[in-house]
Image 1 (spheres, rainbow, N blue to C red):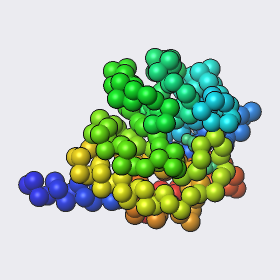
Image 2 (image 1 turned 180 degrees about the vertical axis):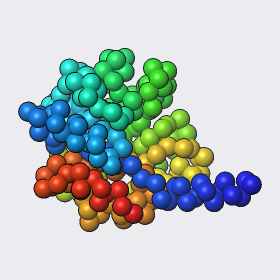
Image 3 (image 1 turned 180 degrees about the horizontal axis):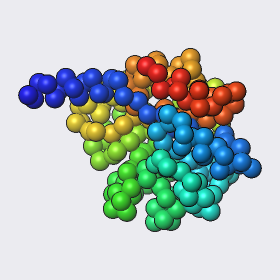
Image 4 (image 1 turned 30 degrees about the vertical axis):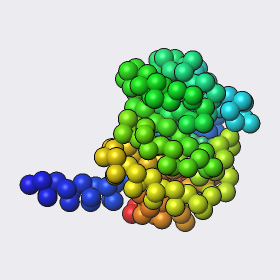
Length: 230
Ligand code: DX5
Ligand code: ZN
């Protein structure tokens, strides 16, 4: 029986992947329309990018917009904080409707404390790493995480070029997750498209964020359907 479960675990590990369209690339003047498109599509989560103009050289949106998204979304909100000292706002993100809350490794001095605080508020806890941050730095926190977000562009903007070294990082991270018996999902964010997504899944990615690829396509829900194929 345990062998059966082991093989099922392997198959599940390989086969299942989630798609999280990034709202950053939506039409903000027609946000409800775009949210309803994602609700009806094969997408699994809403990816919600929060930028503070300090941790990253861009400002996106804050609590009122997240609350408005939550009002219409029928799928979990995967909130990616690109902000300095995110501990100041954890409670407010919970109240705004975050289901998964991801903070940056590079923005947290006491990362373990931050992760525990996110979980104590009843959210799934994620840690994001910038392209220059080695996955080995997560070895002592990965068992406490629900998700690791691997940035495959430098954070701050949608529509950037995918960094090829990401495949290698995802594969290394998968080994660390297995070695530490962690159940953390690996999410890849930035420049994901119809040409690279299968290779990312093969490397070990479980969740793929897609902004530009979905929203600049002629048929966004069809593009989401394509990204779900494997
Ligand atoms: C970038 C954000 C991404 C962005 C991805 O800083 O974290 O989530 O929206 O957009 P694409 O898929 O267009 O690279
Ligand atoms: Zn993001």
